Image (cartoon, rainbow, N blue to C red):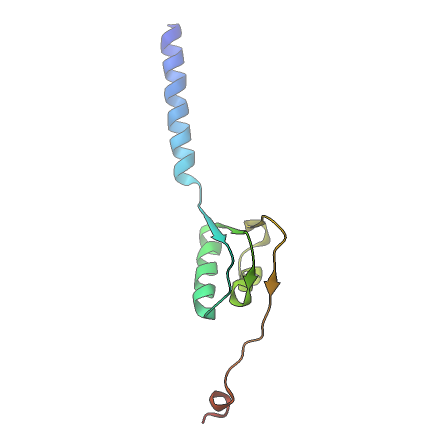
Length: 100
């Protein structure tokens, strides 16, 4: 009887652990991100927001990377150490602006 209780408890632990591991969301880790093309960051951060994924910043987060501050909820962002952020204005070449 005692052995059955121990085995039942162990089996229940295995099922609970498997369930929790299957439902946990993965983290998006940002390490030394220099930024890049804006729309790819918007898509990436919108996906993180929609799935509830946490964003872990572990190093510089520059330019387009900083879009996460306006897209991902604050309670889903984790900063591991003092980080560097650089916000830049969007720009285009004069020829593009003038339609030349």
